Structures are given as structure tokens and as C-alpha cells.
Length: 185
Length: 256
Image (cartoon, rainbow over all chains, first blue to last red; front, side, top):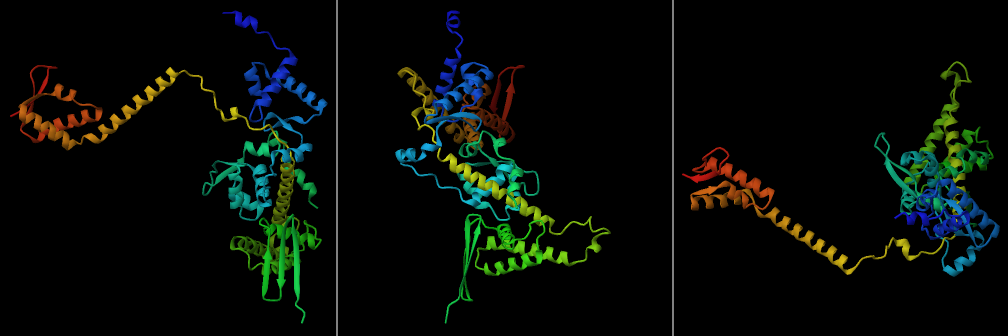
């Protein structure tokens, strides 16, 4: 019975780095340190240092792939430089860009969440119903509960898919809204 | 005679708005979908080279109203927003005309009537810039690709089962199915009047009936309840009585 435990030797760092890389590669979504730690039965610090090491390796090699932290996890992706060739191979075009109305609405939601439709209207000065529908359809925002105020309006916030599509680790990575003030003449 | 065509092209932060005035009667207008009154106002302020913190409100209001008149062919939802802004501007303009002393002793303590509008404009501009940032980010993100979709992404766990496992599961499904059907029949089967009729027929043909026997025939809780009510009902309405020969003994239903 105990033989199984005896056979299991602690992994070397190099081994761990390789396993982490394999798991990140195979994961469908950005893979969080917590999940890695749970699966590998290692503590988070160990995983963190393995990821650091892996990241170094990727940077030093500077090949076609990069290791990025995104939406609360780690992901292996191609580097931006090669998008033209990749697109040619995949025969895809860039997705239709969001309209500026949608982007503006999205930025209000991202910075003010949870936020209601009337609050968005106040900032944008125009009705945003169709933009909100577009964003919901694209799963960039999610409805989350109602605000306890007159009419109990629905509140909106951004989704995980938002973080992925905009290449953000988490919401705190968004530049502070006050930073945009500098651009005001 | 020379046809006078005046073309004003407004660049609203990438979404372009054209106001094409052909002759006096025909005004054609194309607006980017996001352009709202705040955008127009910001544009006008820029055009007039005015300071956003010190808006020459009379001049800007005049310009704004000129555009509003050009915008008569806009769709109503948008036009309504523009008209609200026009009203706000006129309100601010009229407040500016009033002597300030009316409102308070010192001029310093009085809030500039333009303040709220300025705050909104600044806030709006911040989010415009934020939208621009998001636009740039999404453009960069579109140049990044992750690995292609593979089969295991569908959570398609391989079937790790023998034929006997399948058979067992299938049997369970069948059994569940049977139960469901049985319940369905029961639900529809019996009404109180039917139960009563049934009980009457039994009692008047046999003259006496052991209640325990009668209750045992019932197939479901619902039928039991109906049977019980039927017994109570028949004792009340028909010439039938309940007999119990000893304590805790059998109860017999007897036709008199």
C-alpha cells in the first residue's frame, strides 16, 4: 500500500516547469495558478516560481509563442508579429470590430460596474440600448442583479470574455479612468 | 444660376458625421451612430477654440441650435437627446444672464451654472478616451492566436464503460420510465365520485366490507385519501354504519 507513496518523488524544478507548460498548452482557457497548484499538489509559490522560469525561457528563446497572463490565468499564444501569416493560414479575417458606440458603452460599464442603463445614459448622453444588446450578444458584459432603487434597474458588469478579448489580467489592469483626464485639453 | 451646396463635415472622434445642405429646402444628414449631444457640444467647443472650463455659453448655444435646426431629419430617439441638451444650454444661458447677487451674498460661493455641464463633458471625454484605449487593445488582441480547438475541449470524456455498464444504465432508465408511466395513470385514474361509486357498489353487493381490505386495494396515497374520504362520505349520506367489535379490531362497513 505504501509503495505508491514511496515511488512518488518530489519533482525537480525543471520537471515542474515542463509539466506546467504542458498543462497551460492543453488548457482550453487561461489556466489559473490555483488550478495548477491543485492539480499538481504543489503550493502556489512553487507554481509561481515555475511560471516565472517558464516565462523567462519563452522570452529568451523569443520564438513564435509567448506566455501571457490573462483573465486571471496563464495562456500560451502566438506573438502579435506573425498575425498576417497566421491569418493567411487560418483563412480568417479579423472579427468585425465593435462600433464606437459599443466601445464607449463598454468602457462606461468596465469602469463604473456594476452600472445601470440610466447611469450609462447619464454619462454618454445618448440611449445605449442597442449597444448593450450587442455587448450582451458578444458576451462581453453580463447582467448581474438589480439595483435597489426606483424601477429596480438591471445592473451590468464585464465578463471573463471581456478580459480575454482585451488582453487584461484582471480589471485592475485597466488604466485608471482619471489617467484619461490628461488627454483633455 | 449656381447651385449652392454647402457641405459641413464633422469628424466626431472617428465616426464621421456629414451634414450636407443642398439648397434651402433639402437637408441630408448622415451621422455616426454614437454621436450624441455631448459629442456635438465637445466638437463645437473645439471648433470655437473655447476653453472647456470657461465655455462662452451664448456663442456655443447659438451654434448648437443652428446644428439642431439642421438635424430635423434625425431619428426621434436621437433628436430627443439633442433637444434635451438644447434646453439645458438655454437654461444655463438664462441663468448666466441673471445677476448673481440674487442667489447669495458672495459671488464666490455661487456655483457656476455651467459647472454641471462641464463635469458631464469632462466625464464624457474621459470615457471617449477609454473607449479609444479599448479599441486599441482589441486591435492588438486580434493579432494574438491561441492553439486550435481540440477534441477534448468539448469535455468529451472518453467512454470508459463496458457493455454491461451500458446495459445496467439502460435498465435503470427503463425502470424509471415505467415508474413515470405508472404515476401518470394514477394521477388521472380516480376521482372522488368514482371512488364513491365503487365503494357503494361493493358495500351494497356484499352487505359488509372490511375497511383494511378495502384500503389495501389502493395503489397510491392519493387513492387512499380518496378511499378514506369516500368512507366518511358514505357513512354520512347512505344507510351504512361502521362497526368495530373490539378495541383496535377490524372496522367493518355494514349496509343497514
